[in-house]
Length: 78
Image 1: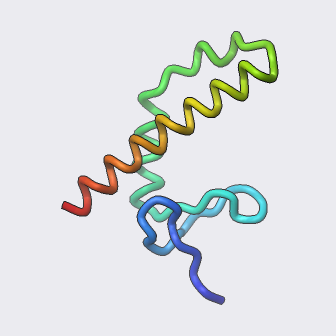
Image 2: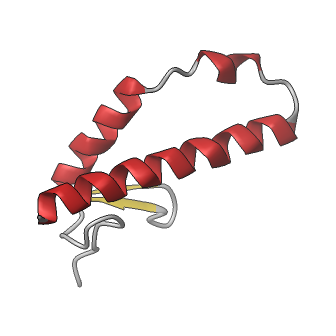
């Protein structure tokens, strides 16, 4: 079986989440994602009521996460 690559840095993924393999992360990127999650304030999300508001929040969170991860991968590659 061919190893799955990390969705952020193309290293070998050690973690897959979702079905089938929606998210794939190497060990370093997984630590970076934990750092991102630890810095986020999720209080506003608990107050959202509509599906549209929740979808918008999730899209913005994913955009911020992707930006954060691009910066972290770029820092490692310099």
